[in-house]
Image (tube, rainbow, N blue to C red):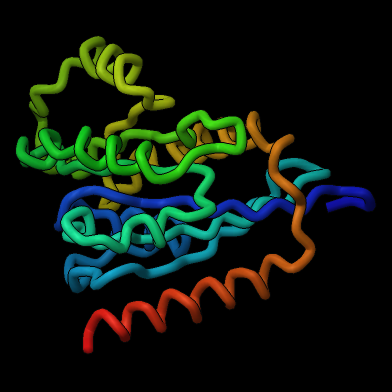
Length: 209
């Protein structure tokens, strides 16, 4: 990044029902790794992706992996705080997880907003497309679903086969940056992320007691 460039820090949520592949998507995107044997996330987990967006802009994405059962708790307001973008994930082979998409989106929209008061940019991920040749989700119907419910777009994704994960993230960051004139650039990104992690780890320990 050249002199005078921008250093941006964005908190991005990854939400959806238990077992839809949220952790696998994050591991693939951040570390280019895939495993069949991830444990279910408890509370929240974190990962950091650094992007050289262009010659003048460095983007740090702090990805928050929110456990599927958290929608039924009262901690999501804490987890969602200061987020500027989100992925809502469902399992393309499990219809019940798609039925929960709007519950997650409504929970999100009720608890976090942009400085303008608008909902944060959200991309819908129809994950595990490698496991289902016929998803039953017509592309034009999905386009309309996203338009009707305020999603920035949608992608069929596969963490195992690395399908459309980079593309989905690119779209989300584009939408975040379109709103970034309202966000301050931060020189203390690493310290802030460390503080966020320490705060939430303390909250997770309190939950487990």
